[in-house]
Amino acid sequence: MAEIAIDNLRHSYDNDLSDPSRLALKRVDLTWKNGSAYALLGPSGCGKTSMLNIISGLVRQTTGRVLFNGNDVTDLPTEARNIAQVFQFPVLYDTMTVEQNLAFPLRNRGEDKATIRRRVGEVAEMLDLVPLLKKRAAGLGAADKQKISLGRGLVREDVAAILFDEPLTVIDPHVKFELRRKLKLVHDALNLTLIYVTHDQSEALTLADEVVVMSDGEVMQVGTPQDLYERPKHRFVGNFIGSPGMNFIPCTLEGERLVFAGGALAAPNWLGPRLKPDQKLAIGVRPQALCVAGAGEEAVAGRIVEAQLRGDSYIADVAIGETLVKMRLPDHVALPTDVFGVHFPPRSTLVFADDRLLGDLHEQD
Image 1 (cartoon, rainbow, N blue to C red):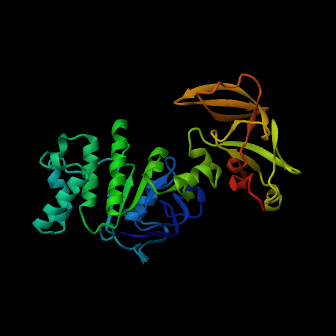
Image 2: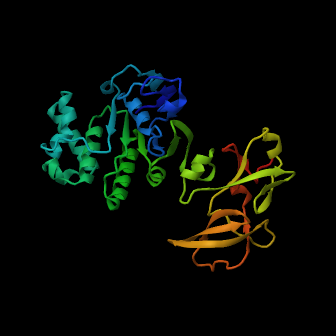
Image 3: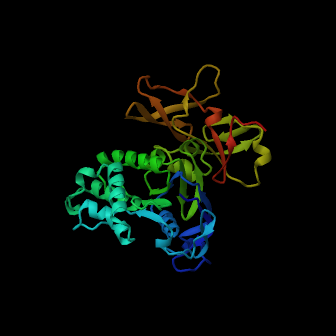
């Protein structure tokens, strides 16, 4: 097992750090706790795979350090880092059997036959590969091949961490759930540090203890799935997490009110002292947090423009004056056909300044 630390790391594939727009990774300082499961989540090209390959040693960062358990491994080659890496496309020997593929890393290191037999058996049992041990890899499906690739990484007993680079991208959707479940079970059983790269938020939020959200070479937020959903620290995170993403409504602070096109809400008393001159404000609120106002609740007038049924709820486009927001409404309740009161629950209604979270409407000084 390993605690992995990234210290003051920046990377450019042409080694030119003078132009920030050309950096694959801007300054990153991050610690991956020993034995925890992490997801690296973000859109294509945001730096996820670069980060993974720097950790494994496949890529040498331009500046900064990589530390395993406090030891600087920046100058160590990949094979000396005791890292297993599973790629998007399985790396196997198709002419070998499943058993031979699993045994290959151990034979390559000169392990004795008894150890090889024991470890192959243990890993095959863990990954449900026992019935396939005598079959050649060439004849197997993509899901089984990816399990073999995972097994090749796990078969060594000295593996400190396992890195996944979008391993389920080529897997049929109906098989993905089972493989995600298996990965979670393997992690829990072995207590390895696990880092999983994906652009799929459902994979990240179901598999990981903590999620690292990246955009344009920067780490935007690290937190539990609940943290990211309920308290995004940056507008990008609020947009990227959730389907649909968080509503953002530009507003201004006028006296004790947050005023926007179509309405106003009571401003928290902490907001004025925290604001800097010329900062741009926005209210952020999740579609399912918005609700039809009850008696005595603060509300602004809204009108449903369009609604689509998704599963057990409607996603409604609601016009609040000139502002359009999305609301998630239950399918067992009749949708309002006229103007109605839209309630913004204070604990779930966030205030952002220049795209960064300041707090919520419920907070006090």
